[in-house]
Length: 150
Image (cartoon, rainbow, N blue to C red; front, side, top):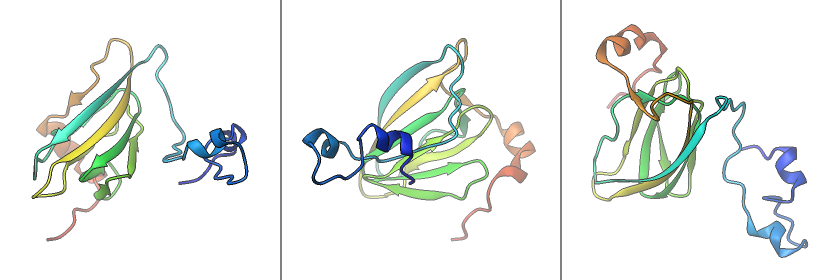
């Protein structure tokens, strides 16, 4: 994660041990760019709780960016063009929205619940989440990162 100068300029997440308490109260967890927010977008923050081993939402996309924070457990996260990864409690993830397919957001643990919070931005007149059908998955298979071998 990079600490962008604009955020540091406002005093949040700078880690200045000698500064006033408000400069130490916030810790930057994620700095994402470039972020494109659809004009007139609405935003929604949700809390997700997956049971042990739950694969999560089927492949889908969002019309705007989404930003997540894992509270407990571990999320198996996979976005089109990126390798699958596991984001553990305290970790963050984000996706740009638009055309990109979000393949996985399920519980990476088989013996514990996983919880995360995600804030999603949505273009006017579009659903917050749109499932991707099998035909499109097949058509775009070349854009998916290689699958891990067991």
